[in-house]
Image (cartoon, rainbow, N blue to C red; front, side, top):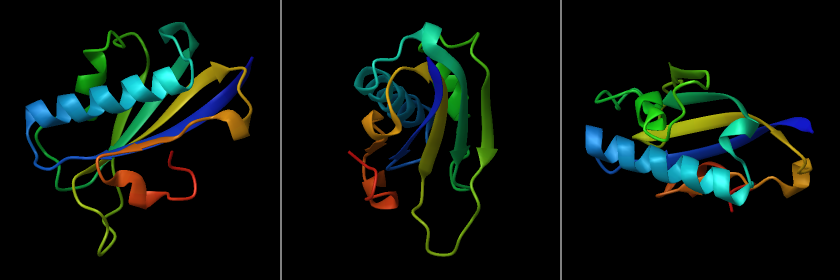
Amino acid sequence: MTVRAIRGATQLTKDNLEEMAEAVTELLSELFEKNSLSKADLISIFFTSTEDLLSDFPAAAARKLDLGDIPLMCAREIPVTGSLPRVVRVMVHAHSDLTHAQIKHIYKRGAEVLRRDIAQ
């Protein structure tokens, strides 16, 4: 197996605990499913969020998927003028037999505009 990095992002309509948990859980669940990943395949997950998201850490939602023993890290996204608001981005590092071309990067809830070149 090879180590792969898989990207994704989701946009929240508002900053609150419930939507953060729902959006991050939805994003990770689809990313794992589309790339045939199990918990055993995961190495680490790195999240960023835009500076307008203050209600919770994206990693807190990931822990609800029983990922508490996977290294999770959160950081602030660079505040570029005119950038999409209320966005959580993720980079999952995992063991996979998929080639780069076979990897499915997942963009949801309006975040598809961030990477039209690789969004599903």
